[in-house]
Image (cartoon, rainbow, N blue to C red; front, side, top):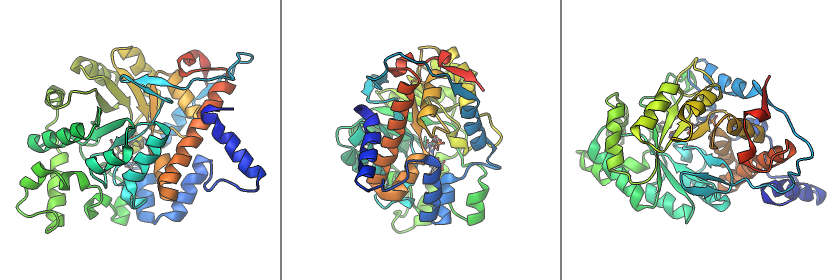
Length: 386
Ligand SMILES: Cc1cc2nc3c(=O)[nH]c(=O)nc-3n(C[C@H](O)[C@H](O)[C@H](O)COP(=O)(O)O)c2cc1C
Ligand SMILES: O=C(O)C(=O)c1ccccc1
């Protein structure tokens, strides 16, 4: 067995030789062991969700509401997992979601994640709230696909400067996150008094930005709280609107993807705005409590937009079966968040690579065993409601 499923063989052969994998292959156990490794601050910051956690639960329930109906004797021994996303061939329909402040999980943070992703050819989406700069992460990623996620600063000079840096450093796709113009009510973080951002973790990009620094009376190194406050003010606020997307278009000549779409009408507005893609996402349940599961809204959105924008999906993807379900319901590819963050916490680059290889192997095998040779063969016919 070759391809991504080869990781299964590798692990069995290691087992034969008396060794077991350095980290668990099971996503739930991985979360448990991340909890043991990390302090409560970082662990709950990553694992936590908005309010009562109802949306994060709804994300998982939405996956559980669908069941795969396997087909036999289809000869799915040879499989091709590759998909084309926004003009690039990816080895599999999986990307790493933008996750900020990765230095709370491992000192190498985004550098380690970018290396692991590059090694597998999986695109890594760098968050504006990263712990390393745009340029350093680009260097770590080498030739691999680079995507940049924007927390859209109110200050146009700072926004233009950050976008210019990302373009100059070779990032091609811009992901604009719409659902986090302020942080939600997150009781875990409030009870712990833990927000990494307020400790200056996740500020590498603004603090290294000439336009941002030019607006400060005192350098961030000399007055950290003031610089953090200014940045928080800059990326929170409600002055964004659909008509202002033109500003981003003027400053970005590659594909633009809007992240955080949950309503069919917003998906249609994205089409009208002329962007190239959307991420159907509720931020892993971290923003609106009591919201609909992200997978529940995917089919309606996919139907509404058709081929006019590329539809990506995230929030709650944990297994190969989840990837099959999201693709069958209309996603071209999925992004994963927390699982790779736990991998990073376990072993930096090696941990992220392990988690990714597990997910890709699981997807490869689930796709094949359910009778399919490629993502293109997945449609709603493959699923049944529970
Ligand atoms: C710790 C953490 C930090 C995140 N930071 C960002 C971020 O900086 N920008 C962003 O667009 N999304 C961010 N997200 C949301 C993810 O991109 C993604 O939407 C979400 O994690 C998907 O859900 P999952 O964790 O269930 O896979 C973050 C998520 C987590 C868990
Ligand atoms: O925590 C998050 O979900 C998130 O998106 C974020 C926002 C600001 C800084 C770091 C992460």
